[in-house]
Length: 357
Image 1 (cartoon, rainbow, N blue to C red):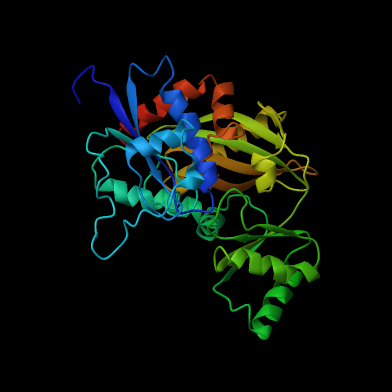
Image 2: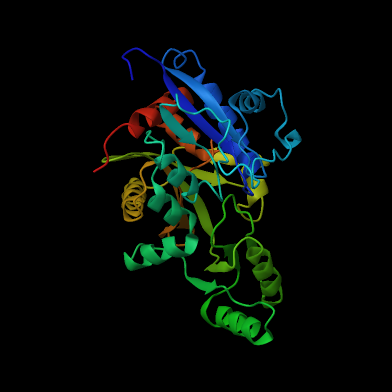
């Protein structure tokens, strides 16, 4: 890139995912940050919206969604996928993009799919690579690795590709849950985000319905033991050196931190969290260790539970493309750590060009 030339940021959002709307909200925040006074001399943004059918819209149409001139739910199937047009990117001009910034939450994005596609462009990318993204998205594989490293977690069980129409299989699953876990339990699809597909189960009668709900999203299902906990979160940025943000706590009014709590409720956010300095240091150490274990770099949000009765730290999960919405913890954590959203997005672009050891 010629010295002094603005970097063109390729902002990808939307997607064929159950977190489509969250992705659009995140992209609007990031778009505004890049177009702020302190950034518009360094960056231009080229928007790439993927609709719910998986079709890519041109940059002009994509930008209109970000500035509110077009409603995303009005975009129709483009007919790009057909026998005559094998190249689904036909008509999408992306050659002048200098750095990619994918904000595709959930399937076909956060799982490493978009990272694999963008790798062929040979341009830097904000965020981690294919492996880290795939592992961070898959709760079962992630927890298996954490278990092997003896990182503290809640008790859990895994059921993969079980036939829930088979009475013997259903009884086997229910009996194993009753034998090995204490109620309440949380039933989760292995691959999903924003708490979609998750159910809190308080007794045996609710298990089957929760399993079927999770299976609608993923046939691989995780069951976790529910404890009385505080929701603690830590931001990560960096490549060869990972930096941690201030520690934050979410206090929510609902029974548990579900989708509506995350995006539609007035939660209390406390940053820094009111916890002991020793616990803070341990959380930051585990956050870095867990990201290294999964080859996660660039930026991420690491979620923890802090058991109320014992102050025991329990690693929950890592989000490799955390939300940037007005209610999202990740930008709040970094603002409390000295990086406003405008500075944060610029820093993430700078990090994308650094070498990874």
